[in-house]
Image 1 (cartoon, rainbow, N blue to C red):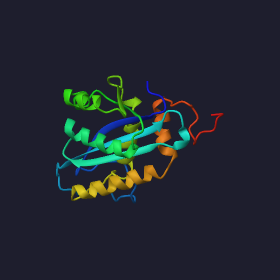
Image 2: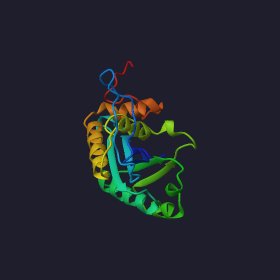
Image 3: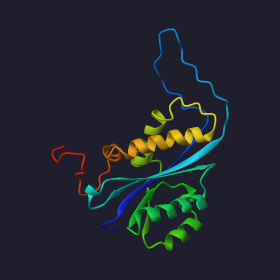
Image 4: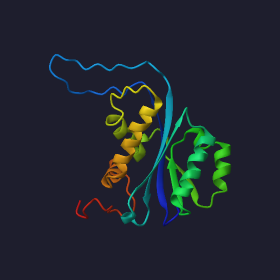
Length: 196
């Protein structure tokens, strides 16, 4: 395992113009109605949460990518090229699941040429170990909840507002990691007291 590197968890999720139905409040006797166009247009988003392996004071880093359609190997390589710029030559250990595009021959060949990147695989059927899953949950329960947009741009705007909310709260990315039960050493991120 590489030392003095960023441990980065990456995951993809989809959004569409169909609203994420969530329970809400209304006046008694006035059932809220969601009006939407039954449009199946979809976009995909990729999120990468990074935690420094030896210096938690550097904070967590969040990279985000949104595109129409779905990700394939070429689209994910584009995301990783942007991540390379984001981390400016620092070492990255990328942890992601067993999606076929993550481990395709083309992806492995590309990754073998990257001296800044090491790929690690999450155990099969273990989304609870990926803190990015909690990022998606946070977005879908807040900014995307009951959103009946007319265009994918409406969904993209709401998603970007959620990413901004998460980015401006330094404790939230650490709470996503803590919820997985995983730790980054040294074990005391800046938002937790040492006696916790």
